[in-house]
Picture (cartoon, rainbow, N blue to C red):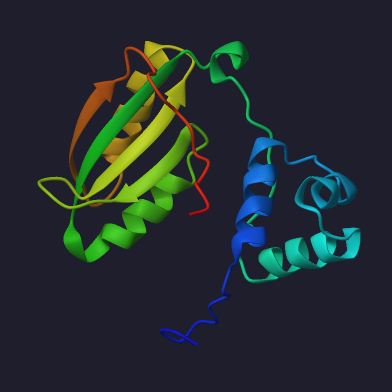
Length: 156
């Protein structure tokens, strides 16, 4: 136990399993076993253990937001009343357009990444954000080109 939480010790097999699942979340236990030279039961047990320990939080499809009509991505910096920072972050994270909420250092307290179908929906989002209690100020940056966007984690 480190810091009051159970810490699972991962080995090279766990790291390789994570890498395979990030490449293809639909990969079968038998295919993982074959690629890593382990039994199907071992693959199954390792994955279940990674899930139970919270290393694997879920499985999802990677979708192209532009093909779904979300052509505009914005990074919004938010200054909030410090006593209510967590409350503001919680409320912002509930908004459908929001894909990331980060608690940050510097002149602003929160960084929000959100996607929109057009500038009108971004405008509405910003105006609603500014109406929220305890939000002092925002700065909005519009993404012009996505150079890299990959939320997979390298299992070091």
